[in-house]
Amino acid sequence: MGKLQVGPISILPPSATMQDIFQPEKGSGMQLVEGEHVPEDQAIEHWAIQMLTRRNPTLFPGPLIVWGWNEAACHKATLSLELVKEIPGCNIIPMPDYRPIYPKIDPEAVINPCHPNLTIDYNKIEVCALIGIHCHFANITLKMIRANTNCYTTALCQYDGHEDALLAIRDLDGPKIEKLIAAVKKVKKDGNITPWALTPEGKEELERIAEFKRKNAAASKEEAVLFMADLESGLDENAE
Image 1 (cartoon, rainbow, N blue to C red):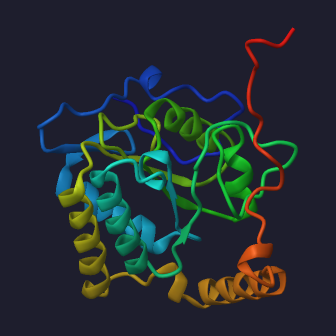
Image 2: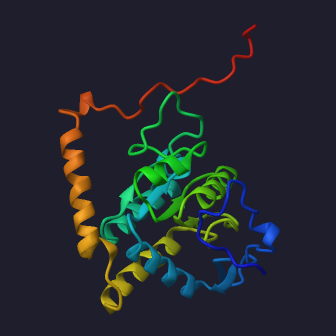
């Protein structure tokens, strides 16, 4: 089995499966960390440490959570917000739509699978967690991030997980998100690490970000602009 490494790798990095990296079987009690199968509790603690200690931790929620399409999705969204609150300095940038956003993406507002590296680079994100993103789009996003950035990618997947993430938690449900929350609290309480946001460098950077947002904030909610341009509607079957 190969070892998955943080990027940037190259324009076309080999997929994890080409390196003989595959997800552990369902019900095995194992999760995938950097290409290796490790016990779930160990993987969850490692996830907590990465999210706490790396620069600009960010949660990327997708349509399976953002759209609140059923009661389970709403419950996961609520738990996800609780999780973010436990990680000092953690940001939330949603992926609400998979269609390309033209002519320009607002990297502070959204992340899009067509150009995720732009959002990662612009916000200087060095650790992220994808949650509620359909698997085929998550796979594209993870490959592009690993190819072009030094971001430590993690995937919180309700299905089989993702080999191209540096760390993947599969079969994600409410109780498993609660385990992530508990792990973050435990790591902070143990005091063996200092969260990036509480380091001098982290505090300085977060202060600069907050000041930039204050200067560029809309005067009111009505004046706020989420997208730089309308979403393309796609091909019209009746167009000639």
